[in-house]
Image 1 (cartoon, rainbow, N blue to C red):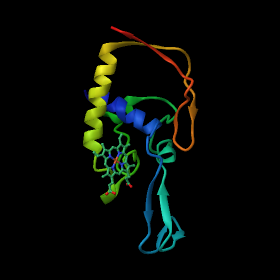
Image 2 (cartoon, protein in one colour; image 1 turned 30 degrees about the vertical axis):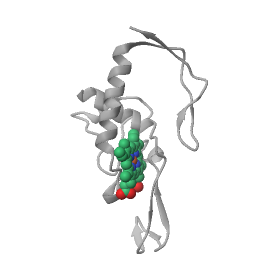
Image 3 (cartoon, rainbow, N blue to C red; image 1 turned 45 degrees about the vertical axis):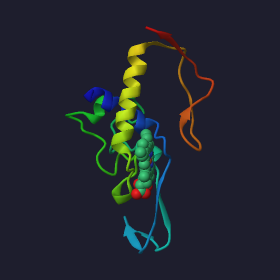
Length: 139
Ligand code: HEM
């Protein structure tokens, strides 16, 4: 289950289902020498945050073990599929449990045969192209 959780996190890192977390500034702030004025909307974009090499080694690779010791990547505000702060997703635990149950059934009930390399559309949400096929046979 520990590794399955890491696989789910790695999937959320590469394919975040929600494209943005937005905040409207209630006061002006300066970050890294840039002024963000009161009233501006700041958008945190997981598709960009999750491929920053200073936070994720080899971000182009699917490596669930990045979320496990000793690497322990995906720290707070670096891994943001559920947003962050006081308005972070309230359903994180529920989403993780449902995904684990679904993945456990999908993996144990079917033999999965991939039919080729998957490709993705990037906008408005990153997702696998509709023409990609996976051959599933009941075990
Ligand atoms: C994989 C599944 C899910 C993903 C990727 C997801 C993602 C997100 C994201 C990105 C936000 C915005 C967070 C922010 O602005 O910082 C959010 C907010 C929220 N989510 Fe989820 N969510 C998921 C499942 C769920 C589930 C299952 C529930 C409830 C049962 C839920 C309830 C909420 C609520 C209530 C908010 C608003 C929180 C607030 O504004 O204070 N989410 N979610």
